[in-house]
Length: 297
Ligand code: NAP
Image: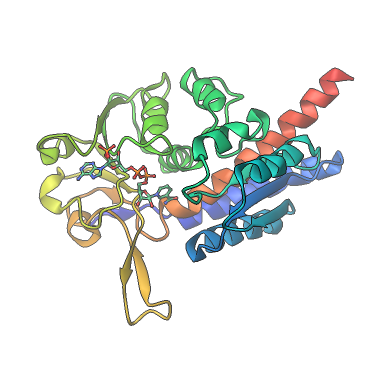
């Protein structure tokens, strides 16, 4: 039976460490501040945003939500981002996705100043991360997965990591982090057009699945002893839950746990790590801004 990789517990330990980093910044007069821009009233987005700002506040950081109407224009949204870009009390800016269809999300993300882009989606940060520059803000989910792997003592050197999915926010940055000197993994990325997916997943020493399809990975698709990181978040109806639904991943947890050495659960695996890394990136942004001001004096 697989060992459970407990993202909630790893996050708890990391957040205790980060509270000390926040205290050090508060001592020099800097309160790390995150501003989240939410467009519209999507209940799932509202819940995500609330958990992000709440997490900030529990660490003594400033978490602010700016809720804009569903029909906000591109120019109005850009004006809000301009104001946040110029505000010295705001260290991190995040625009919650998905945006309504009339807003060009790539242009919106590129409008955030790269020094405050704590989601790491600006092309400048993607480029810095790709070349391994420590100033880069690495997108929170891949950064959280790397922390999980490191803190669990899972060796990646020379291991074959198979990633299912090739998205810009999870899989591509993760591939580049894993293949870099240090982690030294051999990485295979797969996607919708990969023929015979199982022939790849069965080769994995570490299998990372970021697709959004319940039960995409079943026990016959993995080799014994594999480490499985399930990024998927799928809502399925559940009348026994007060919310009427529950979350499951992309991996058949029960079947795959019988063969795997270790596995992340959903919920309680990658999800908490993502928010924790958002806090880490906001602290990094506050520190970098404070240091650059010191250097200018
Ligand atoms: P995405 O942008 O929709 O990408 C999904 C990827 O899966 C695409 O590359 C797609 O291939 C690939 N794919 C689809 N069907 C496939 C199949 N049958 N076989 C192989 N590959 C297939 O999604 P994402 O943003 O990366 O998110 C993926 C999942 O992770 C979602 O469930 C999301 O909710 C979850 N997520 C969780 C967290 C967290 O904190 N836990 C954070 C981010 C995302 P193509 O490129 O060929 O279309």
